[in-house]
Image (tube, one colour):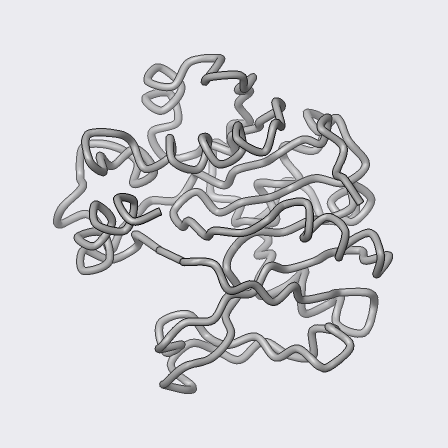
Length: 236
């Protein structure tokens, strides 16, 4: 099954990047330079290479800086901006961007992490399961920083386990989602809402699926991981 090229993509880029302040303090963390390029540009390349065109950037902290640097287009992508003027969380930011969404299903990506995956396979998985929401899950050597996601043999998400609860290898939420627009419509507006702590747990048992993916993964949220980013992008 091929995916429709007109689906909207929302990238969550509004975070403060507090843990990264010691090494990136003059710009949003998604604009941190990796091999001379903003980290965000690698995510946009991935979207462009999938032949999608409609991107909504959910901006908050230093949003005007980000818009002035990235502009209204990138390669074949149209970039639109949804501003939050107070912290709304990942769910609240999506609800705030609701009126900009042009498709029945939206691809959502965290702006501070990168994961290799096949969008065609992911889309087919989401459609075949008639999912309200699908979470892309990836395998890492140490889950302690991220928390774990438990998925059964039928690909239903069973539970989210808090970070720090476990160490060692396991499956984590990679921060890439396919969500029906109707689900986003149901998120309470004009208040802080967390996708990870409020919306997804409320969907367990209601067509919430986990797509298990084996692509390379990087999160630049800490100085140590940020330092690995240059080598990471040279190998993919």
